Length: 165
Image 1 (cartoon, rainbow, N blue to C red):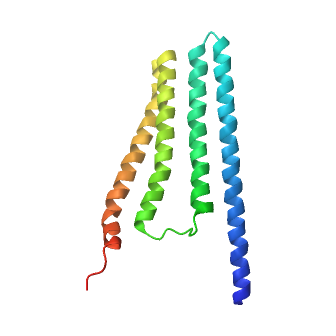
Image 2: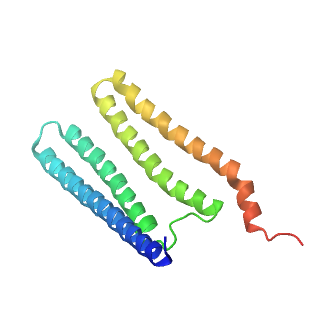
Image 3: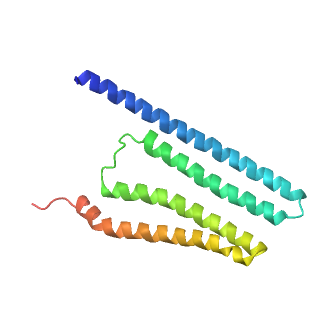
């Protein structure tokens, strides 16, 4: 393949990547806004309902998921659209990217578990199995991230230190 053809193919894929990740980021942002609108509607219904707690907890649950969806959209936009270089160049950068993403997931799962704990507490204590599983999953994510951080710490240090002469 000639150099000119290679450059055109690379430009095409760069445009395609920009378009696909931009469209996905925009779609996720719009879905997140729609979810927040739905949650506000649930809160409006709660004002006139006899079971206010149920509607409020549903609204909180939807808002938590909406924020997580928006964070994923923001992450896609920052990492795939705004970044000049798309490849991770160092262990440190990989650790930071993974940490950002896992923090989003852990917060969403933890808040969702908390909402379900409140729902189960007002309905039936035997329903605590699912929120307990969510909390366990969040804990395992944090432990897994800590293990990853620990296992890659030495590699990061050796990449930052200048080679000895």
